[in-house]
Length: 149
Image 1 (cartoon, rainbow, N blue to C red):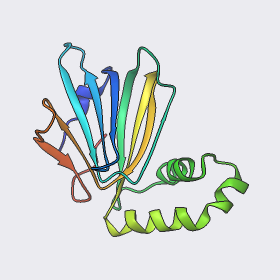
Image 2: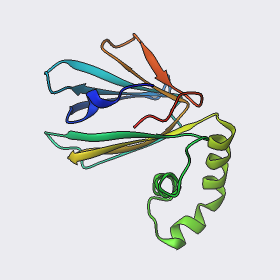
Image 3: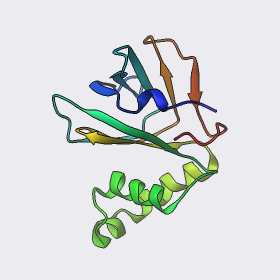
């Protein structure tokens, strides 16, 4: 099981988006001041809010076909519709259903970065990995990984 404990209380200090490779790299500094990266691959939708000069991560949650919940559904609606308002969700019902289908098939996962302070993010992607060096991936989370929290 992958250990996300390094992300708890980590400082998020940069977000890099590559539309060419459909990836997002989030730069973090752990409580020991070591830099590491959350690399998100196959990004189809990305939302970040409240990015500040100081951003402290509370936790990272990943929803896949095997651990889907109402909370995951609400995050997907917020990501696609931009709101939990019923009118907004209804207007985007088809897009939400399409993305939900990809998650149920195991093609995509939904990632949430929850903050103690500052930036939060919701990402719909194919997989997510964490590494100490950009370009190196010691582990990754995909549809076959155990629940990561």
